Length: 212
Image: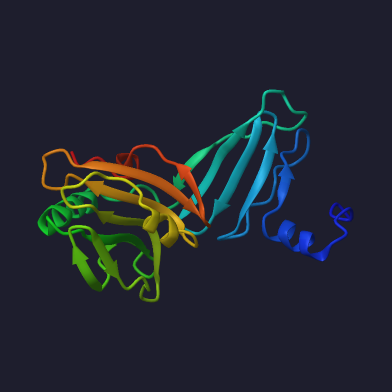
């Protein structure tokens, strides 16, 4: 048993929940990660984090190795929307709604509707919206799976606050903050949230189809 060296049951539980695996050099590829759980994989060039559910998959290097390790090469890295890119009109709607809410903050979520097999923009019930804060009910109706969590900072700068870090601790989705929402070129910051781990993310536009 590969975990036989773990003499304390608590260590076995930790390993079971967040295992660290070797990327095979010669044999078959690793099985798919368990949905909504993340794992670490050691490849020849460093340590990677992997996670997936039915809508988002991620495989990203989190620590490069200065040595070439005797393991397999990890390929096809990055963040993948498993149902394809989000329609560009949804991004257009997001920008319009964030601009209309100025000076207050705005919140929304891109979700995957499993019954209709389509992306939708879902706006939660807002409890409070001010120029410095937006509070809302975070529960989703049945059948909707979160893909991207969005909120705006009105005309302020786009950044992830300490409050954002706390609220994202248990999530699995792409997170985005929009700033300067009334301008012709709003600013954005984006990250991948994996069960409390925050991973760098390319530009927001990569997740959307070209609006033409």
